[in-house]
Image (tube, rainbow, N blue to C red; front, side, top):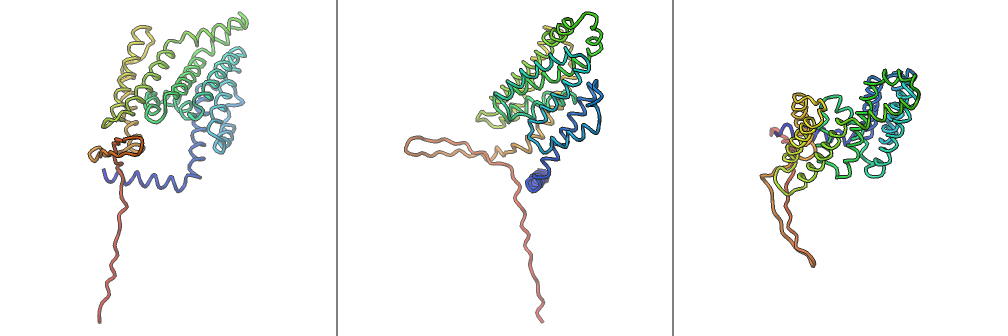
Length: 309
């Protein structure tokens, strides 16, 4: 454990010393990964499917606020949808406008949630995001979680139905509008996942704020079990086609990653918990103090030995 704590302190010190360089680099990598994933899953408009353009846009995003990446990603999605059908692009623009109104109104600082959640879906560990959001953020962040889920299912729907949408030219624009809108509204899997992730986020948030030992660990496991139960019940009711094996394996991996995340963010020693009571002119205070697990810097004493002649 001491070696892990020492490694954590070294990583923290390294980041604090080089934050001015590391933060733009991380933003660049995240933008590069996000835009490449969009082009791989959609890729219908050749003009924005260029690696050089993606590299230039990623470099721009590295020096701009994080919310810029959300807007740029939405532009890429709409561009690919426009290459499929103008009607499809109009519907997606409407969906994104509604999401952005909710997102910028209630949780404008949760950019990473909206960006990382679709990526976590691609890595088969989407549960990681509602758990981490419940541990670090507040109840309003369920808006960002919902937006991330919607973005993933929009991309998935367009990718799976692009050929069908294109073939509806004979029936006119109304048929395309109806097909896209009905497909998104009637996606029971998306609704169940949004509900499940919102419930998981709120449960994790409530439990981790309790004054009990190992609150974060309990919150993670209860949230994971709740998510699995809700998804399985929804699968039985609406036959959404969730894979039980994939769901269980993804949950285990997500919990393992969340525990690693907890080690770097919230690592405390409950064996040294102290209870403090004090008062002022108006209140009595009862405080539970849990010390952090920290690694003290080792001090080396150098002795100078001189020979006496």
